[in-house]
Image (cartoon, rainbow, N blue to C red; front, side, top):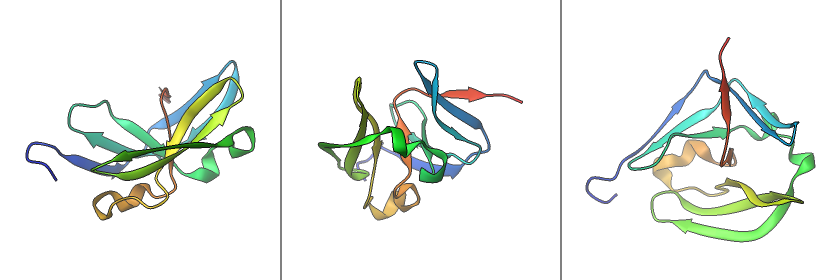
Length: 109
C-alpha cells in the first residue's frame, strides 16, 4: 500500500439499515466496517441482509488500487447505488461479496 494510506476491516455490531423512499433495502447487525484514510467509514453488509431481489446488476465497474475491481447494483431510479468486490485484494479479503451503499443509517438500541 502507498505510504500514509491505510485500510482496516473489522466486524461491527452496529444495527445498520438502508432505506430509500420508505422501502428497507437492507438491515444488518453484522456489518463489516471498512476504514480508509481520508474517507468516511463504509459499512459492508452480508448479501443475506440485503434485498437483492429489488436490485439489478449494473454494467459499471470501477477500480481501486487498494481494494480491487468493484461491481455495482442499481435501483430503477438510482443507478449504481450499491457496490461490492467479487474478488477483492488480499488485504481486504473479508469484504468479498459484501454490499456497500452510499448512504446508510445506524440504529441504536
